[in-house]
Image: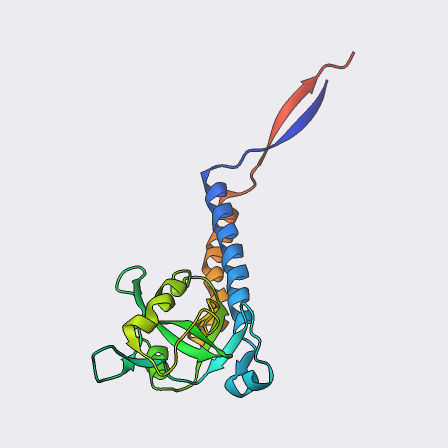
Length: 207
């Protein structure tokens, strides 16, 4: 008689957990590298004079203050916040308007951060261009002339939904590091779980 062995892939719960963690780490690495690349080369405000056309995921070293205007029948102008959105627990974002690259654009910045204070004071901050979160910007801009006293009427040719999200550049550059703990834990569990393959004996009778 000769013994033969059939190899089968039969992962247990530990293997599955390890694979999920490793897959999650890969997603975080890819996302982190994308975020880092997105803010690596920043276009300055001076650079916009020579290169006014901007595209999605372009990054910018922004140094301008939010658009100010006064409501009709009021005397004092203020920073126009056209929307405030809550994301998660105790996390809010204010949506401003700024005139960048020859168009009024929405600007999203997290409240209570250093970047928020810097932006409203006209100091340098890092942002990237995107249309995400700005779908309702045209609705606001369509009513802005009737709500605010403006020196010049704003039309749909004066604004763009390609806006800016202001971020902490240092955090964006190292965001891929979030994947390391999941990778390490996944590899440790995979090591403990041993091989996911089992060998079943198949016995054949020699004639």
